[in-house]
View (cartoon, rainbow, N blue to C red):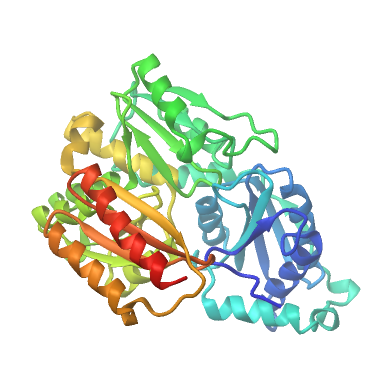
Length: 449
C-alpha cells in the first residue's frame, strides 16, 4: 500500500481512498494514541474549511479520537493557521485541519499540527501510517469508562482575532482604509470580515457565503480578477484575496494590478531591514521565486536562500538559519516572529501596516522589483534518469544560461508526482524566454522518451 501522507498532509477526492470516513477515523485513532502518556489525558483541536465533505470527516475523526480516550475541541470553520495558533493557545496536544486548501470542493484533506504549532515531521507521519497499515489499532482502543468527550469552543474566532491584532505595531490605526477582501467562500469567511470591521476599515467583502460547493470557485487567491474589478469600482486602497484554507493571500493594488507573493515578500523584507528586525539579514524562498526577486535582494544587500518547492521546506530552512521571513510566490508567507506557519490574514496585515507607516500606495511599494517573463513547459517523459548525467541536456542548459547571462535563469526538474519534467526559463523578454524554454524542452523530450 502506498504512502498516506503527501507534501502537505493526507489529500484526495472526498469519499474515495484515502479521504474516506473509515480512514479519517483511523487517522484520528493513530494520532490520539501517539499522544497518550501515563497520567495525562490528551486533547485535540479540530477545525475545517467549508467543504461539504467536512462534516463527514469531522465526525469520523471525532469518533476515532474519542475511541482512544482522548478529548476533542471542535471550533468549526477555521483557517489552517488559525488551528495552528489555537493548538498552542488552548494548550492542546495537537490540532487537525480538515481542508484541501486551494483545490475544488470535491477534494479534501487532513493536516496535523502538534502542540508546538508545527506540522508533523516525516518520521511522525510514518509512525501514523505504520500504526494504520499494521492493523494494530483495534487492539489499542480504550475501555468504555475511559472514552473521550467532544466539546465545542464558541470563542475560538475571538481568540484568533486578538492574536492577529497583536501582530500589528501598537497605535497603528487602520481606520478609514478602504479594503476589498475575497474570502474564496472558504475558512476565512467569518474571521477576516469581523477583524477588519472591528479595526474600522471601510470594508467590502466578497465570497463570504459558502454553500459547501463554492469554495475556491472562480474566486480567492487563484482567481483575483473579480477582486481587482471591485477594487477599481469602489476606489479601494487595497484588495486581499485568500485561498480556501486561509494560509496564503494575493494582493491587488489601488490601480487594480495584482501583486504577487514575491513582491509582497520583497516589500516586507525591505521594511524589516530598515527597521533593524530582519534577523541575520536573510530571506528564505523556494526555487520557483521570480529571478527579479533575487536581483531586488542583491540591490538591497539582503541574503537570499532558496529551497525546494513547498512551505515545509521554507520553514525548515528558516528554523535552521534563524530567519524571520520566508515564503512562496503563491502568497504563502511565514512571519516566524509571529507564527509557525503561513497565515494569509496575518501577512495581509503586515503589508497594510507598511503602507500606513510609509504613507505610500501599494502600487508605489510594488515598484521594488521587476517581474521577469517566465515560461514553464511540462514535458511528458517515459523515464526519469538523473538529469545531471545526461550530457545533451546538461549542454543545452549551459548554452541557454550562457546566452541569458545576468538577465535570466533556467530551472529543469522532475515532478514529484507525475511522469513530467518541468522546464522553467525566466528571461529579459517574453519572446526570448519562450525560445529558450522550447530549445531545452526539445532536447528533454528527445532524451527522456
